[in-house]
Image (cartoon, rainbow over all chains, first blue to last red; front, side, top):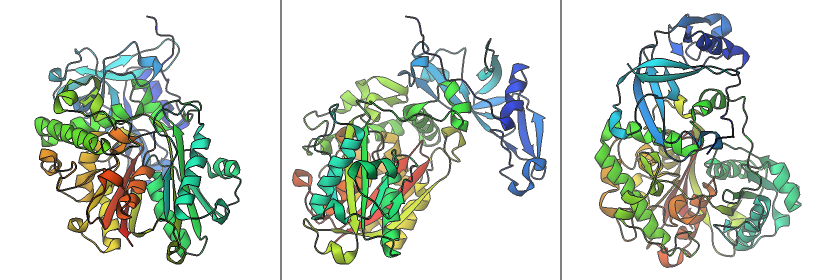
Length: 141
Length: 371
């Protein structure tokens, strides 16, 4: 069966352009507060750990890509017609070395619960698209 | 105070969502012995009060479309209490109507939200996926086997209550632990029986001053305490996947009411998923973090058990149109008024109704007392 419904695509916003442009070059760029040194995800026009410094209080830093599995689910019932052809697939929250949580998919692993351990080491996989944004997925390191 | 459901719950393709709002509104007003023309304040979620008021043909002088997920209607109870106390209005009507099952006019999503930008492209969409990831984290922290057992206990005890409720979707469908474990995966670790129903339904609540409530046709209940709030929208931004905002709203509502957990005769806890109940009981303070599996063990929350929970059969087995929260208050009021039929509790004088909205994002808690 062909899957004709497109998946929802990211619609970058002015403050998130740099993140999405980075992924196209296979780089992960994160925001960090100059004052507190804390990273944040997703990109904002405000540092949540130092809100009153405004955009001037934020710097962009390239992340290492080192990550570990924080939690996951194995999706059997597609929540959107665009994913009907993908089930079962793995959704996950991964914790980057920079101490931010990123929503993503785990790829390259059979979708069975015993194949996943919370805390397992992960590395990034950049999934490019001809006409859209690059998605940041992860696979076991 | 009056409460009501739409005439039919479940599969109701012949009624639009607004028709479900209006049917429930009239039923709740009839229950209170009031007329639609008495209403001077309107509260709803999912729809704008503009649309609901226009459909009903009323001109409220107080209006509140606070819409933070299925908890919204519990939050509306607190807002109505405050508005009446401040003198803005006297007769508040809270309405809900949603055709989750028949879905002729689904609510459009805003592609500009961070959730749409950072979660949806990965298929992190809709409640089951997000709640499943939270549940998996809970299993990691507190033990997979005992969490699984707790989720099964909640699914089965809730079904037993539904078997006593003539309005319940699963009134005549019992379920066993084997049925639970054999039901298909929706989003592992969730079986189908971990997940709420998807139905068409409406409900409404009427709230007024203590003076006017004395004339209520079928009796009234008092709103003794309330709390509301939220700490994230998308699941990836939740500060702690095992601690939802009920950690604040529960203690606040109980303190305002001047009661303690052991005083509570009935807990109506929004059960979008079995996990939602498990984590909510801990957040509300009925037990400590990680103690939920012991708290719900051995069918302690089933009919005849020590801790009556979701006596209408819940979102899991009674009805769940999408934003279920209002039904927790409807059932609490019926139990406190002694009008819950075959499932009526003995000596039910204090109830907690607790709504969770979005992706474990928002909560609203009220403590209600019998009059």
